[in-house]
Length: 501
Image (cartoon, rainbow, N blue to C red; front, top):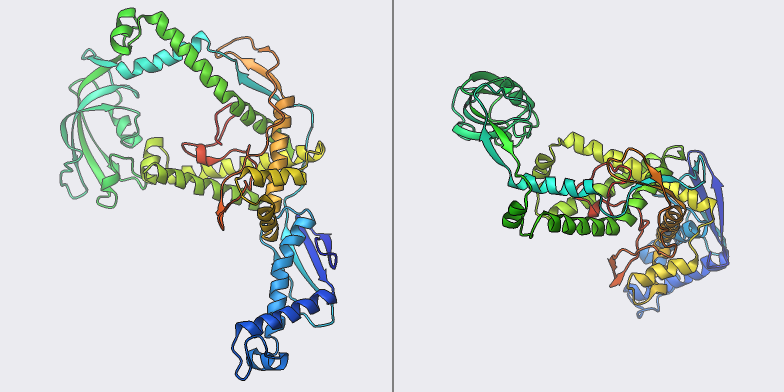
């Protein structure tokens, strides 16, 4: 540690727990006691004595014999254990648990111990370059066709099918409907003489759609549906107001969805291009630019998934819980910034609260596994965070006095988070640079391998901005790991997909 009169002893326990014993020599204890008496003499009023002049017996008599010793003990423990964590190179994943200890005594050294859970040092099944698949650069004909098909979906129309056409699970229909509650009273919000309805849209429970499948124009069906515990959007306002809903539904007409034909005339009148060729050219350029901008992130996500699959062992529950907590916090912050309610989000995604929770748990487990896999890769290849790297993080955060902010983080026991972030970023960049990439054309039958462009190895860990006493703090997590803040919603990421940071 910085002060030579402080000694630390580290003992590895079971279940990734570490016991640290800190010993401070008698000289420092005496200096701390002397200073605290002087501080108390200035802080409190003692009758008959000027500020700062009260002797020790008077202070002990007024405040209690152990008041000063207890203050010194608390200040010493709280100020020393974060430094011990940093100096011992520990990476805690829980708060420390302190052993019982006596108060400091003048003229004697003082020792205290604490136990803390640390992240496990798991290994990978192999340290050879990971093999990943990425979309081919540029825009293929299929890419352009898919974009045009999506565009046509915005300009569809409907035409009536023949009277013999049966309703299917994905049909579009016009219906008339009468709905009553469990008291037999009509429900105005659902009752209608004519309403367009698309099956499979999750507006009603699936049982509702199932009752309509097979009907033809003019046919009627009556049925009842129990009010679901987690009602879809059309029934949400009725929650708690009725136990069931009775429906009488008539199919007025079955419709066919008609997409426009892509012709020069349609393109010019509707989209604003001169002809189909110019539209395809513009779309191709746009896709190529998007791919180019997204490729580093897609590649990063792909190597994270690949290296995590090599992890031998599981991330501790505390790491998964921390990742889950961060994901949820970031997610709700983003919902708030978009002025969207959680219920509306679930309705748009067609998810239940339980499905959302399970999704977040799965993603948190992925993130924790990826973090430990990056740690293993960094250890194996010696990708450590130097003091220069750490100081550079604070400088990049915009702090006016990087050295002072670094010292503050050390005193708070947080400096290991910055070291960890830097080493993980180095591991990500090393993985991306060494990765063996197969470029895949969408829909291609034969996949051809060719080397991908190497990512720059000079990328440094990004610094998140955190305000504290007027200074900005650097990122506590690796800059390259997935984050929910840039996601539209937390969801389990798949290889090659755009995740989030």
